[in-house]
Length: 393
Ligand code: ATP
Ligand code: MG
Ligand code: MG
Image 1 (cartoon, helix red, strand yellow):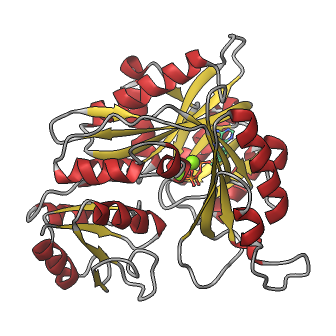
Image 2 (cartoon, protein in one colour):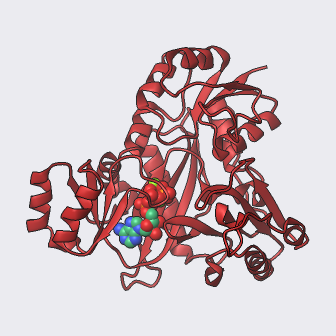
């Protein structure tokens, strides 16, 4: 039987492994940690660093095709593997998605075709550029200074109001390459999942609306009425054109901001992209006839891409480590029997042994025959688990 390989052992790798195994594939996970969510469920766990030649050689030798679940895998690693096996997505596109400077340049280049731009921004890589921005780009304040590389879940970001705060923030971030982005008055956020095959076949999911708390995804709404239909169509088309323009292969998630521009449906601004399945797409496991992970398996294995059909409205609640602690900071086991006695609840836990604040431990998807019922159950589950973002459900 064929083996599919994945770089990274987190929950995205774990759900990829589940999808691959359902189709009868063996799987190999390359991950340094001995107790990772994906390593624990894979046929083969190659315990090695992402740039260790021996580990990479072993992965290439075992696998028919290789993908990544870890956004910050060294681009060189993907290049090395691509000499031996098909790798999707490619080192080139992962390199773009890993670096906000290149990512925004790409969004700008394809703005004509995608019809959406990113937030006004400036690149700050040197003290001279910092001074130039302080003098010439007052229009970007108040803004958010973001490191070009390695940021996620709002880490590596500082909100700044003045040029003095900007200089302090750049120093705080270590003087590394950054972008300063204008702070936009968001009315909503959404994301779109696109899957593209080696042959250029493209399928996509309807946009989901996302609610973040403290920079981390808290709630995803995937149902009729989650945003104006005209906006949904524009976001979906834009994400597809961005994937096509990249020559992307695999599953890509594009995040958008919705801003009040005076129009009826609101203005759309592209934020960033993730070269892999995405937390906001986890609802597809329970609410669609093909999940984002099924599509990732199909894309990399060169199988036809089924056009996914959502059969139920859904709301996803992220379960962070906080849920495992009571008000006084003591460890507790969440009341799963109470949660699971609510209709249409689908609990996913990633097999992580230690709960920490802000750590993604699992998610709960609620599906049902109608949106109102799904919202009612989601609210009850959020109350039972003490989850944030309740007023957004
Ligand atoms: P992820 O975990 O999604 O990769 P990240 O750390 O890469 O997150 P961003 O998506 O850039 O960070 O920003 C995190 C959140 O901060 C956004 O979802 C949004 O809520 C807010 N935010 C980011 N940039 C802006 C902006 N220019 N204007 C207003 N809000 C913003
Ligand atoms: Mg990001
Ligand atoms: Mg983001």
